[in-house]
Amino acid sequence: MQIGIFTEIVAGETRAALTPADVKRLLKNNHTVHVETGAGGKAFFADEEYAAAGAKIVKSAEELFNSAEVILKVQPPGFNNSLNRHEKDLLREGIVYIGFLSLFKEKEIIEDFKKKNITSFAMEFVPRIARAQSMDALSSMATIAGYKAVIMAADKLPKMYPLMMTAAGTIPPSSVLVLGAGVAGLQAIATAKRLGAKVEAFDPRPAVKEQVMSLGAQFIEMEVDRDAETAGGYAKMQSEEFLRKEQEVIASRLPKTDVVVTTAQVFGRESPILITGVMVELMKPGSVIVDIAAEQGGNCEFTTAGQTIVKHGVNIIGPVNLPADLPVHASMMYSKNISNLFLHLFQGDDNQLDFDDEITRGSCITNNGKLINEYLKQKFSRER
Image (cartoon, rainbow, N blue to C red; front, side):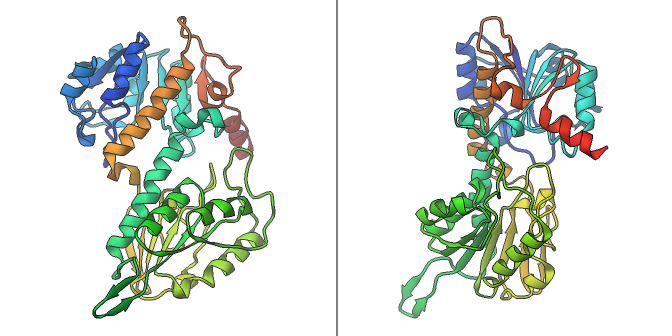
């Protein structure tokens, strides 16, 4: 199959969908790879590296759209300013499209794919099962986001993280509170501990306590419903009463906390507000909140996506697309995820899809002019 790799056009996006190392993997499986010139430039992968790996460098995105049978991307289709056309209008009928699709925000993409009989796979819908771990781009990008959030907080905090014994006296460690102990939260805990901070973590799922403590952090407990997560490992949306109890537990920690990293997200829904405006007032001036959930509405009432604001002397950072801040490793991880998924989907010589396979069935969005993803079908039917 002829695979096309494009230069990402979304503002601020620096990741490449495929690295030269994974080009070689696809060539070994008798596929060809065409790469738009500059596709890896922002992630420091030069055209020459792709060519040396065996890829053909294509100068025009339009030429690549006209020839590719499979498109691997990071961001969903968007408006290409250089071509003065939307990418969805450039997609040929009957191709295969694999990438993040942000379907909760951009539902119209589904209609475009259906009209053009495009077989599409969304990276965010790869099932969270053991044999799909190597394809789980959400977890890969969450790892980077958790790490970067702690670094951002350290840069903004007017203190140092570690305990220090100096000639001028003892400097106590900064206190970091991580809300949510999923992949991003666990990486934030680990990073803050490596930097020497005193770390606490809160999560409504008792099952993660052991993981939190294994990283050297204190787990903040509360009485919770045991049914706090979905079968796929995501946190469930909880009741208003449950959320109020969470806020009370979190509020009790805030007066002594220097940094809060919030990571709580609910798949397909806006993020829960864990820190209200009143709760922000409890924090010391100069404290920092880094809200990883900013793009889904944020866990702090004051969070503004893409901005840093100051309320009651507290810096509230609402980062957008944190993985793009670390494009080398983010591209390497994403490339491995998407190439693993592609090679799983198209295993046989005939390149036929096996919809009896849980990974294929779960990650596929459209096929044969129809929406086939069961989760989205049920969600959209409820919203009518």
